Length: 149
Image (cartoon, rainbow, N blue to C red; front, side, top):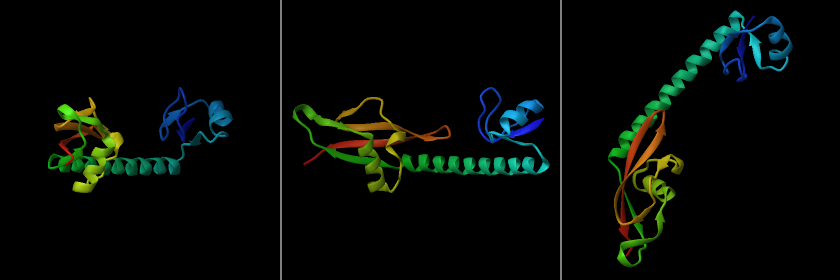
């Protein structure tokens, strides 16, 4: 019997997938628990429409991520911080500060979770920070840290 899964089922498949299972397994386990629906012409068409919509949404989000990566190339975020002797900062510049600087200075909204700091920024200077924007798209954020006067 062919069924379309409504949820991920361990050992069978992922949500939205059409699989072939035994009649008893479908009737006694999958259908009563609403883990799957019988694969009729109507449900197959619905599945195809949902898949098309999902692919279109994914393409739109990937295009947005690529546009954000292009915008980041032109942005040089300037952050001021207090420092002690020898040009060392009190504390470190965090991804939260960089994210806030991007939104205030350039209007680019990138969540702090998507910014990747290899090492904490604890000195003045210029830095390049990777931004993982999703869908295998990464951008580079340029950050300059200046002394607060």
